[in-house]
Length: 212
Image (cartoon, rainbow, N blue to C red):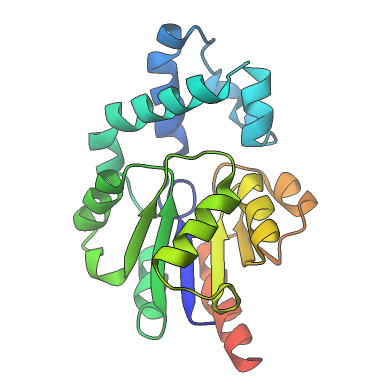
Protein backbone atom coordinates (compact mmCIF):
# COMPACT_ATOMS: atom_id res chain seq x y z
CA UNK A 1 0.00 0.00 0.00
CA UNK A 2 1.65 3.22 -1.17
CA UNK A 3 -1.15 5.77 -1.49
CA UNK A 4 -3.97 6.52 0.94
CA UNK A 5 -6.82 8.57 -0.48
CA UNK A 6 -9.57 10.17 1.57
CA UNK A 7 -12.99 11.46 0.75
CA UNK A 8 -13.39 14.95 2.19
CA UNK A 9 -16.93 15.62 3.43
CA UNK A 10 -17.97 13.17 6.13
CA UNK A 11 -14.63 11.35 6.14
CA UNK A 12 -12.08 14.05 6.95
CA UNK A 13 -14.31 17.04 7.66
CA UNK A 14 -17.25 16.90 10.06
CA UNK A 15 -19.66 18.57 7.64
CA UNK A 16 -22.94 16.65 7.90
CA UNK A 17 -24.95 19.20 9.89
CA UNK A 18 -23.42 22.08 7.94
CA UNK A 19 -24.59 20.54 4.66
CA UNK A 20 -28.08 19.83 5.92
CA UNK A 21 -28.38 23.46 7.01
CA UNK A 22 -27.02 24.51 3.62
CA UNK A 23 -29.61 22.35 1.88
CA UNK A 24 -32.42 23.87 3.90
CA UNK A 25 -31.26 27.39 3.06
CA UNK A 26 -31.75 26.80 -0.67
CA UNK A 27 -34.41 24.08 -0.67
CA UNK A 28 -37.24 26.46 -1.52
CA UNK A 29 -35.29 27.92 -4.46
CA UNK A 30 -35.04 24.41 -5.94
CA UNK A 31 -38.64 23.47 -5.18
CA UNK A 32 -37.60 20.97 -2.52
CA UNK A 33 -38.88 20.31 1.01
CA UNK A 34 -36.57 21.10 3.90
CA UNK A 35 -34.81 18.31 5.75
CA UNK A 36 -36.08 17.53 9.24
CA UNK A 37 -32.88 17.90 11.24
CA UNK A 38 -34.40 15.85 14.07
CA UNK A 39 -34.63 12.89 11.70
CA UNK A 40 -30.97 12.74 10.67
CA UNK A 41 -30.43 9.13 11.77
CA UNK A 42 -33.14 7.99 9.36
CA UNK A 43 -31.51 9.96 6.53
CA UNK A 44 -28.16 8.29 7.26
CA UNK A 45 -29.78 4.97 6.38
CA UNK A 46 -30.36 6.20 2.81
CA UNK A 47 -27.74 6.26 0.06
CA UNK A 48 -27.22 9.38 -2.03
CA UNK A 49 -29.16 7.70 -4.83
CA UNK A 50 -32.03 6.90 -2.46
CA UNK A 51 -32.12 10.52 -1.34
CA UNK A 52 -32.37 11.84 -4.90
CA UNK A 53 -35.28 9.47 -5.50
CA UNK A 54 -36.96 10.42 -2.22
CA UNK A 55 -36.71 14.14 -3.00
CA UNK A 56 -37.23 13.73 -6.77
CA UNK A 57 -33.94 15.42 -7.69
CA UNK A 58 -32.81 14.85 -11.28
CA UNK A 59 -29.14 14.90 -12.42
CA UNK A 60 -29.14 18.51 -13.66
CA UNK A 61 -30.89 19.84 -10.56
CA UNK A 62 -28.53 17.81 -8.36
CA UNK A 63 -25.44 19.28 -10.01
CA UNK A 64 -26.79 22.82 -9.60
CA UNK A 65 -27.86 22.12 -6.02
CA UNK A 66 -24.48 20.78 -4.93
CA UNK A 67 -22.65 23.64 -6.67
CA UNK A 68 -24.88 26.21 -4.97
CA UNK A 69 -24.49 24.67 -1.51
CA UNK A 70 -20.70 24.39 -1.85
CA UNK A 71 -20.48 28.00 -3.01
CA UNK A 72 -22.77 29.32 -0.28
CA UNK A 73 -20.99 27.36 2.43
CA UNK A 74 -17.42 28.12 1.39
CA UNK A 75 -16.61 30.05 4.58
CA UNK A 76 -18.33 27.52 6.82
CA UNK A 77 -16.56 24.60 5.12
CA UNK A 78 -13.18 26.28 5.49
CA UNK A 79 -13.82 26.66 9.22
CA UNK A 80 -14.96 23.09 9.84
CA UNK A 81 -12.90 20.72 11.97
CA UNK A 82 -11.40 17.29 11.40
CA UNK A 83 -13.18 14.45 13.11
CA UNK A 84 -11.56 13.80 16.51
CA UNK A 85 -8.08 12.22 16.39
CA UNK A 86 -7.88 12.38 12.59
CA UNK A 87 -5.30 15.15 12.40
CA UNK A 88 -2.83 13.15 14.49
CA UNK A 89 -3.55 10.03 12.43
CA UNK A 90 -2.88 11.90 9.18
CA UNK A 91 0.38 13.33 10.51
CA UNK A 92 1.58 9.81 11.27
CA UNK A 93 0.47 8.42 7.91
CA UNK A 94 2.15 11.23 5.97
CA UNK A 95 5.54 10.06 7.23
CA UNK A 96 5.36 6.85 5.19
CA UNK A 97 2.60 7.21 2.60
CA UNK A 98 1.44 9.47 -0.18
CA UNK A 99 -1.85 11.06 0.90
CA UNK A 100 -4.55 12.35 -1.43
CA UNK A 101 -8.09 13.69 -1.32
CA UNK A 102 -10.85 12.88 -3.79
CA UNK A 103 -13.89 15.12 -3.42
CA UNK A 104 -17.00 16.49 -5.09
CA UNK A 105 -16.50 19.68 -3.09
CA UNK A 106 -14.73 22.71 -4.54
CA UNK A 107 -10.95 22.37 -4.52
CA UNK A 108 -10.69 25.88 -3.05
CA UNK A 109 -12.92 24.92 -0.12
CA UNK A 110 -10.71 21.93 0.65
CA UNK A 111 -7.53 23.96 0.35
CA UNK A 112 -8.89 26.64 2.69
CA UNK A 113 -9.93 23.97 5.18
CA UNK A 114 -6.47 22.36 5.15
CA UNK A 115 -4.81 25.76 5.47
CA UNK A 116 -6.92 26.63 8.50
CA UNK A 117 -6.02 23.27 10.05
CA UNK A 118 -2.29 23.78 9.31
CA UNK A 119 -2.34 20.58 7.28
CA UNK A 120 -1.75 21.75 3.71
CA UNK A 121 1.60 19.99 3.55
CA UNK A 122 0.19 16.60 4.51
CA UNK A 123 -1.57 15.94 1.21
CA UNK A 124 0.21 15.34 -2.08
CA UNK A 125 -2.86 16.09 -4.20
CA UNK A 126 -6.53 17.08 -4.17
CA UNK A 127 -8.61 15.62 -6.99
CA UNK A 128 -11.93 17.45 -7.29
CA UNK A 129 -14.85 16.41 -9.49
CA UNK A 130 -18.37 17.82 -9.78
CA UNK A 131 -19.73 14.36 -10.50
CA UNK A 132 -21.90 12.96 -7.71
CA UNK A 133 -22.73 9.64 -9.35
CA UNK A 134 -20.54 7.75 -11.77
CA UNK A 135 -17.81 8.10 -9.17
CA UNK A 136 -16.02 5.12 -10.70
CA UNK A 137 -15.23 7.36 -13.69
CA UNK A 138 -13.85 9.96 -11.28
CA UNK A 139 -11.59 7.30 -9.78
CA UNK A 140 -10.32 6.31 -13.23
CA UNK A 141 -9.61 9.95 -14.10
CA UNK A 142 -7.71 10.34 -10.83
CA UNK A 143 -5.63 7.23 -11.53
CA UNK A 144 -4.64 8.61 -14.94
CA UNK A 145 -3.93 12.15 -13.81
CA UNK A 146 -1.78 11.21 -10.82
CA UNK A 147 -0.26 8.10 -12.41
CA UNK A 148 -1.48 5.79 -9.68
CA UNK A 149 -1.85 2.02 -9.71
CA UNK A 150 -5.12 0.82 -8.21
CA UNK A 151 -3.40 -2.05 -6.41
CA UNK A 152 -1.29 0.49 -4.49
CA UNK A 153 -4.31 2.41 -3.15
CA UNK A 154 -6.55 2.26 -0.12
CA UNK A 155 -9.50 4.63 -0.20
CA UNK A 156 -11.40 5.93 2.82
CA UNK A 157 -15.01 6.97 2.26
CA UNK A 158 -18.21 7.37 4.25
CA UNK A 159 -20.94 6.64 1.69
CA UNK A 160 -22.43 3.63 -0.05
CA UNK A 161 -21.59 5.17 -3.43
CA UNK A 162 -17.91 5.23 -2.45
CA UNK A 163 -17.98 1.48 -1.88
CA UNK A 164 -19.82 0.82 -5.13
CA UNK A 165 -17.37 2.94 -7.12
CA UNK A 166 -14.30 1.28 -5.59
CA UNK A 167 -15.71 -2.15 -6.32
CA UNK A 168 -16.26 -1.22 -9.96
CA UNK A 169 -12.73 0.06 -10.37
CA UNK A 170 -10.97 -2.56 -8.25
CA UNK A 171 -9.71 -0.28 -5.47
CA UNK A 172 -9.75 -1.44 -1.86
CA UNK A 173 -11.93 0.68 0.43
CA UNK A 174 -12.10 1.25 4.15
CA UNK A 175 -15.62 2.52 4.79
CA UNK A 176 -15.98 4.83 7.79
CA UNK A 177 -19.18 5.06 9.80
CA UNK A 178 -18.60 8.48 11.37
CA UNK A 179 -19.83 10.33 8.26
CA UNK A 180 -22.93 10.52 6.06
CA UNK A 181 -24.10 6.91 5.92
CA UNK A 182 -24.92 4.61 8.83
CA UNK A 183 -22.96 1.48 9.67
CA UNK A 184 -25.76 -0.87 8.56
CA UNK A 185 -25.95 0.65 5.08
CA UNK A 186 -22.17 0.58 4.63
CA UNK A 187 -21.91 -2.99 5.88
CA UNK A 188 -24.59 -4.13 3.43
CA UNK A 189 -22.34 -2.96 0.56
CA UNK A 190 -19.49 -5.27 1.67
CA UNK A 191 -16.52 -2.90 1.91
CA UNK A 192 -13.05 -4.39 2.32
CA UNK A 193 -12.83 -2.83 5.78
CA UNK A 194 -15.31 -1.02 8.02
CA UNK A 195 -14.08 1.44 10.65
CA UNK A 196 -16.12 3.03 13.42
CA UNK A 197 -13.57 5.57 14.69
CA UNK A 198 -10.44 7.28 13.31
CA UNK A 199 -8.08 5.65 15.81
CA UNK A 200 -8.65 2.35 13.99
CA UNK A 201 -6.88 3.64 10.87
CA UNK A 202 -3.28 3.29 12.07
CA UNK A 203 -3.64 -0.35 13.26
CA UNK A 204 -5.32 -1.22 9.96
CA UNK A 205 -2.49 0.30 7.91
CA UNK A 206 0.12 -1.44 10.08
CA UNK A 207 -1.65 -4.77 9.61
CA UNK A 208 -1.79 -4.31 5.84
CA UNK A 209 1.88 -3.29 5.73
CA UNK A 210 2.92 -6.33 7.76
CA UNK A 211 1.12 -8.62 5.30
CA UNK A 212 2.36 -6.95 2.13
